[in-house]
Amino acid sequence: MRVFLLIAALLLSACGNEVPKANINIGSIAPTFQAFGADGSAVHFPAAYFGKPLVIRFWADWCKYCEGEMKAIEMVYQANRGKLQVLAINAGQDKATINAFIKKIGVTYPALLDENSAIARSYGVVGLPTTFFIDGKGIVRGKIVGEADETTFARHVQELLQ
Image (tube, rainbow, N blue to C red):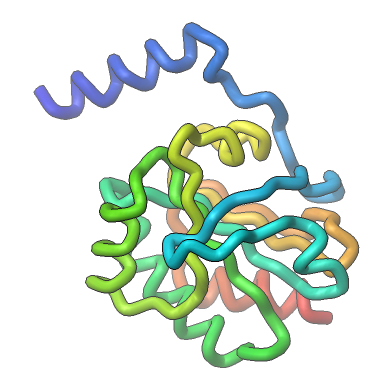
């Protein structure tokens, strides 16, 4: 029954104005956005990240692959601290849910609120998790849609940092 409700919700959201605005792929300019972190801080992309390699990760706590992958991302993030920025953008959930999940899994990179999924739509996200690897000029250099292991994530990061 739960799967049926999820499928129905996805189909209904695709029928209205909720369809992705873009299909951002390798070579695309990453869409700009402003958001608030789960800690209340304001984030402006690309202004705050110009010149810095950045990973943008779209996720939700109900995504069965997101928890393990976010922990794997933490390992790569810590290994590249100072050279790499990571933003975990939560698609469609509230601050309390995000904070509880981040505390539970123990990641240290920033989690951002996208309660209406506007940022996710601007990136053309159609499934979670989705990860974008963006160079210091704001160009998408890599993209992972769906589940990936730590090795795959680390390879994308190394390519981004070269």
